[in-house]
View 1 (cartoon, rainbow, N blue to C red):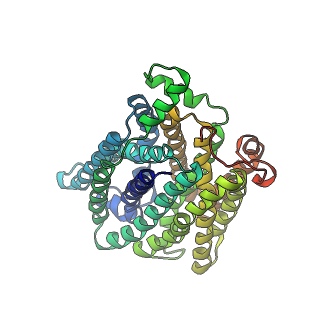
View 2 (cartoon, rainbow, N blue to C red):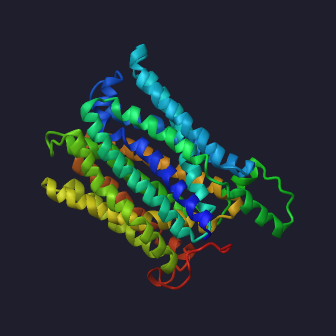
View 3 (cartoon, rainbow, N blue to C red):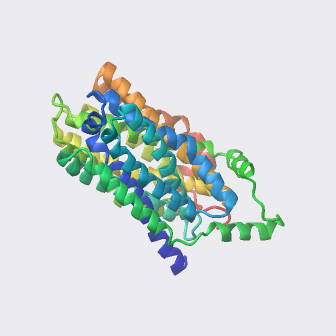
Length: 419
């Protein structure tokens, strides 16, 4: 990896970090924010507030990725998505001032999600374009995601205790800063495309539909997409149900700040350990981190919902973060291993579509299950889904994962053939 690559990896990681901070800043204060925006109190309004944004993520993630592949540029699109997302946060804070009500707030969330997903997905895709090992680069993305979520949850909770809209203003400022930073990054996709074309005699024109087709027809791609779906489902569950669970007077009765700090118990190890675990997957293959990590993740998720006292729940939240850090970079790196460089944007867009669908499912399943059955059965259902996907796709991961011999130790570097 060149020094320029290292510098761009740091800047792109900072962009991913900033986007996650802006997003998670709102989560600890959602119960009060939705009321301030005109909704009735309760988990139902919080669920739809989060669903609106992630519905837009699902709809637009692939379009951003395929557009960047077709244009041969990612950085300008990252800038546009980040600055547009910042503007949507300002508009959200203005909704009550104009008396528009909660439905208008949901519409603003949809527009903001459509813009913000471009910055997030393409920043990760740009990390995929760098050299130095797919696991290491996706580990950098994972560190940024985890650290951003940790910082956002702690700071957002503290700000929400002061004023319901302070996290919204802070999110706008952070997103705007990420857009300015993205403008300093060099595009590697142009070089990747030129290198690929010099070997196959293509004419240099990449059609939007062609890159989508290349990504969709890649053998084995559905495997990491399925894991991404369930992993994000669990994260979405914690983002919604976890906040209400820890603040509910019938469980632990925490403040917004304390609930945010509890979420950080998950996000800090999730952030800190992703880089070493990503590099580990480059050495031993993807099988062990993906499958064994997912099984452990499901078990400890169930444990959080069954914890009898807060210290036990807090300790298990740390273990959830460790298990998530083991599997997340290896899952993203598996996408890079399988897909040709010229279709990476579309492939990562698909990965983020499945991830966003997972978040949506986490909100909807978590909110509905909690309303109908209570917290413990909801945790059991979500943790059980994580266990089920790991066991069901065990053979498929073994077949496609680089180094996928016995427990992932059968050799291989975990890098794509082009590297």
